[in-house]
Length: 193
Image (tube, rainbow, N blue to C red; front, side, top):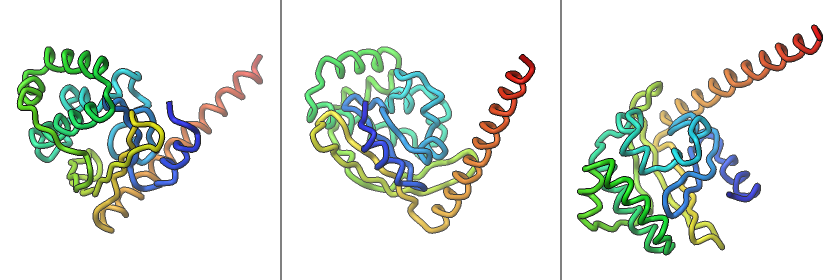
């Protein structure tokens, strides 16, 4: 779990997708921008909110990658570095066994023993609504929690920022409409009783 303070930090990045992940790459917390641009993690059960499981087994995540193989290799190499740094050997071993059993691609990439830090760079995604978008990412350690890191994706161009902002605003408006409709329906049900 993350502290309410850390969640507020994530939420402060209004148009920049951001999330907190564990050493085993489970996504623990995210902001609205991450839900709209990357993946709506709230739709997934906790064990499904794993970046490696998503990159190797979610067809939508796989399709969104401009170069899936390069993205997957980067993830495996950066995961290896994170896992070694955090010393989460028991959890890592179980996850690696599961992924290796389910994915020959993962097994081959894991055997290559590549190590790379998550660090910073530019990610290109094929978004189902926005089309191609570019985001600059940076990963940060969470002080006092060696098992956690925060990743922030900042729109790489002003055009990407404008398109992402418009999508988030549109998504927020739709969410509010659903909430208001649900509340109105609940009031009608209570009134009929």
